[in-house]
Length: 196
Image (cartoon, one colour):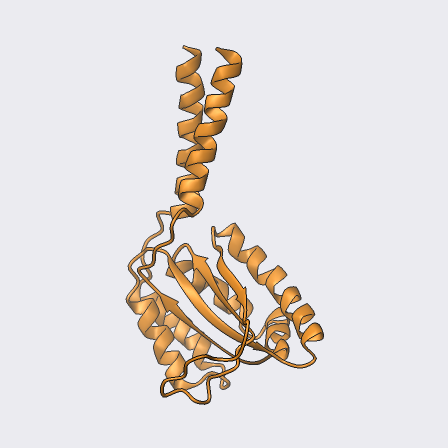
């Protein structure tokens, strides 16, 4: 009986984690896309091409997670820029983590570009990163709180240049879903050994 209770709690815990991490939110509607585009159209600093990319991305919502691929070039002095970027990330990633989003990959450039193909003005990046979002709806909710905010200004002040694009579908070996499943099973097995 104890074994059934232990593994029942383990399954319940993992089911709760799965519901939070994967989510079951409805896809973005055409009306919601129109609403967010009104917001973006009120900002003259955003190019028409970027607005069109956002509109296409939100309009083609598949309800699944995606990663944002980022390349960053820190402004000089680098130490000050790193502090500003860290302050931005503390606020932004805090909001993202509550929605089951998180960094997947972060790296600092070891040298300048080794290969450039038809992009001679896109060289010498300082860092690269990939951030996982649970859904496009989560990004839809985060952007209005971020764009034009004080912490977003810190990001802009810390960079000479940057670009980001969403990528989906995507895959990673391991990841929180598998790690959490293994950790939950391990804890349940240890509890079983202690109690039974």
